[in-house]
Each structure stands twice: as structure tokens, then as C-alpha cells.
Amino acid sequence: MAAVHAAGPGRRVLLLERTHDGGRKILISGGGRCNVLPGTLDETRFVTASSANTMRKILRSWPLAEQRQFFEQDLALPLMLEEATGKLFPVANRSRAVRDALVQLARSRGVEWVGDTRITGLQRGTGRWELTSSDDRRFPVDAVIIATGGLSVPATGSDGFGLDRLGQLGHTIRPTYPALTPITLEPPAYADLAGVSLDVTITATSAGERREATGGFLFTHRGYSGPAVLDVSHVAVRGRLAGAAPAQLRVQWTRFDADAWAALLVPSPQAVTTVLRHHLPVRLVDRLLAAAGVSESTVLAQLPRPSRLHLIELLTRFPLPWTGDEGYQKAEVTGGGVALEEVHPRTLESKLHPRLFLAGELLDAFGPIGGYNFVWAWTTGRLAGLAAAASL
Image (cartoon, rainbow, N blue to C red; front, top):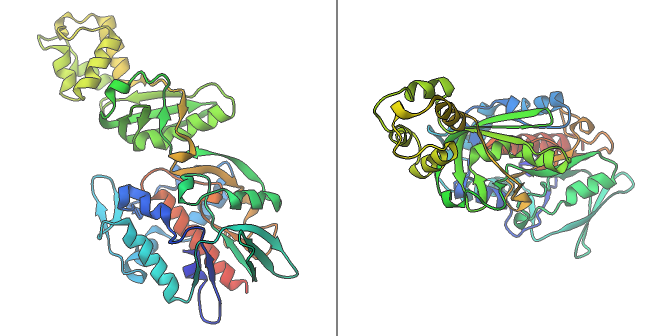
């Protein structure tokens, strides 16, 4: 995106790519379908340890409607809204269509693609920048855009070079951590529920920070995953890395709150398990009843009040035990990164070094599941590309 918007008549734009084909994270996103954009954007759902004001200014530089127009008109890539999730996918329903369209547009605008190139050096010369590759090639340039990503899914080419080099150049790097990553439990006490999935509301609280997410939840052989878990995982991860007390994770297993469950569980001849199985997966119901000390044969009329209250507590505020996370190997994004206060919000040019522009995941901001992190990528890429071109 940065190369596309930096390109233009009379400008030579090099795109130095670590991998052969590029866009590996695009290819693996959305289960191979690529959730290009969210249907709507709530900027309050983004996370940063830097200036929230700067983050908002960056996000507002390219309205969501204009981004959709870019994909559908400039890229000739029609998008469709998935009503159930509120996400925008390409009509082609293939991540490769998104990656290939971006590469093709960049090439058509004159961008020179230099693949299989691992940059190992970046230094400021006399009025120019010079990049050095692992095979000793040198690239003297007038302006540099660093869009090297964070540390998540290293198999895609993210090796942390940009973060390391920017730190050496004097930029403040907010502590990095895996975000949007599955949570683990050792020993895996709920491994027998692996494969059970449902929509929940989960709340994570740690050291004064509280996040809530509603969406899919999946039991795994190692712990828990699904959009709702991933969206609050950073609270647990960040607290653990900071040495704080373990974050508290609480789950409301259905859309029903305590009052709604109290109305459903009023004394009657109906079996408790029958009521619960009408709203929850059978295997999960069995575990919840066991945790509440209620037998499967118990009818509502025989359910003691303390047991009823305990069961409602487990249905609406279940304490989810956890011990760790899946780390960068499965994290969808990297939390932390270059402090936003050290870039100009209108250009993303470094405040420390002229004609050095920063874009994407290496900046200290990320959003939830659902296309939000692509919004950040597209927006910052465009902003840096336009500004780099204007600086020459």
C-alpha cells in the first residue's frame, strides 16, 4: 500500500521484499479468504500504550468508505459484507486475489519489485539513506518507508528487523508482546471439550485494565481460542509479562445475564440439564453441572437455592483458568512498537530523522479481530507513501 501511493511520474520506487512473493499475512488471513475491512469501524477498540490522540488522527486520515472505494475501484476488487460477522471479504473469496491485486497495481504504477531481499542495514548518509542487504547489495535512496511488521507469525518473514533498527536509531520502542493469540492452560483441564464452540462474552481484568469481547469461543486441546478469546488475550499476556497478578478471565456462556437465567431456572418439574442443553453444547453443560455439584437427574423443583445461585454464577461469570499463551507463533499481531508520539500524525515521518517514514504493525497500535488490523495497515501505508513522495 505504501509503494502504491508513493509511486508516480518521475519517481523511482523500490519495494524491497523479504520473501519471494510478498503479502504472506494477507494470504493466511481470514482462513484463506482475507477479511479486507470491517463493515463498520469503532476506533475505541484499538489498543495503544502511546498517544491515543495521535492514533485517532492516523485512523481518521482515510475514512472506511474511501478505503472500500479504493479496493473496489482502483483495485477492481469487489467486496461483499458477511452479514453474520459484519466483515468485508472479496467476492472472489480468496486471499490471493487481494494480494495479487495490490502487487499488480504497484507494478502498473511503476514500482520496482525486489524480492528475496533481506535488509540488514539502514544508515543515514550525506543527505540520503542507504540500505544494505544480507548479500551485500546497497540501495542508496532519498526516502525510506519501513513497513517490516512486528514479530507475529515469523514464518511469514517478520523478524523484528524494523523494530531493532529503529531502536538503534533512537526511537522509543514500547514493550512488545503477542496480541490476538490463543490462551493456554497447563495441565489442559478442559482438553475433553476440544472442538466445542459457541458465542460468549468474555471479560479480562488485570492491573486496572479491563476488556470485554463478544464472539466465538473455542475449546482447544491446549486451552482456548476463537475471536472473543483473541480480542482480550493481550490483557492476560501484557499483565503476565509485566509480572502482575494473573489476569482474571470471566465468561458469560450465552446472551442471558443472571436475571434471565434466574427466570429460566425457576422451580418446575423440568430437569435442569434439559433447560441448559437447550442453550448450550451438551459436553459443556455436563462440565458446568459437575462444577456446580448438580446431578443430571435433578429437576428444577428439587434444586436448592444455593445450588441455583452457584449454577447461575457459573453460567454468567465462569472463572476461566489459564496459565499461558501461544506466543508469537500464533499471534495475529504484535502489541507495542514504536511510540506514536515520535511520528508526525499527518505524514508518519519520524520526528527524529527526516525522510524516514514508518507504517503498519511496527507502530504501537493494534485492533481486534475482524479487519481492524488491515485498516491500520492500509491507512498507515497510504499515509506514509503519499508523504514520502511529497518529501522529495
